[in-house]
Image (cartoon, rainbow, N blue to C red; front, top):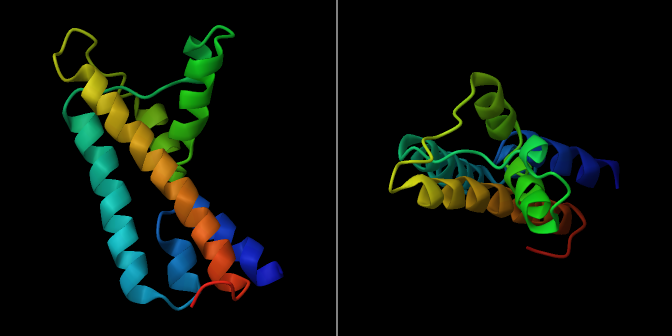
Length: 122
């Protein structure tokens, strides 16, 4: 059980790290590339991050913020650097969707690490 939680923690912090820890090297590199590319595309097309400080008690934006936080270190690094996006850009919402999707995908990868570590998945 400890192995599963270590893999999940690694997968949350760095996309693909949990799979790398579990010996799935090719999957780890592919998942890392996919999540990082999606996140960087979202930032590069002037999309912003969903932030809890901007939600003011609204349920759906809070869920979107939690989903965006699922990208782990990428989210925290992006939030620290401050890519708030350009709300006037035509691609702003598309960019936010890319960062949101990267977070959701990484959360699914965390669950995948749990299944692999517990032997539920080959």
